[in-house]
Image (cartoon, rainbow, N blue to C red):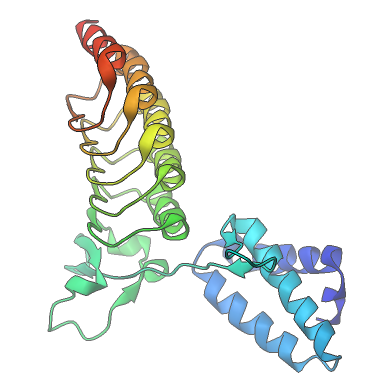
Length: 257
């Protein structure tokens, strides 16, 4: 561990550790962070060197997963390693819900990184969880790997365009989800463009709800282009999105194709 004294050494160390721990799957992240930080604390060096090693470690892991951030007024990196608390009911072939809705007869909530493929989750219902970018990345990772989820509900989460991009990229990979509910977020033109790009190639989604997302003209035109080539989508809610006359006309024309 003494090799973490330089950015290059730290980055090589973190890459090697991730490659040895289940090919860098999310479940290894909290454990890896805990172990390496404890080891860093045992290194017999001056205090300023310990702080530097710790900062290098956070920056390296953050870059690997694109989940590091810089707090306002600070130049140091703050690592955001999400582990969304949730539960699955029933335990096999059930619905994945926020831990806030855990029934009384379930003693312990899970973390999303603990939900295994063997549980065969059928739907993800995480409405009203105030999902930020870092958590959206974890959800995106989960659904991109899932072979059993058929419905995704992320409504009323205050998600922005960056979070929507992560979800859209995952839906490009996923081949089982047929219903997506993103209403009541704030994905804006950026998110609308990402969703439109996804719909151009997606062949499984039949229902999409984007109500109340401030897509504006740019997002509406991206969806219009997608509707011209998408042959699967049958239901699309675009209400309350400030689309404007131009994009609304293009969407109407696309529906005639």
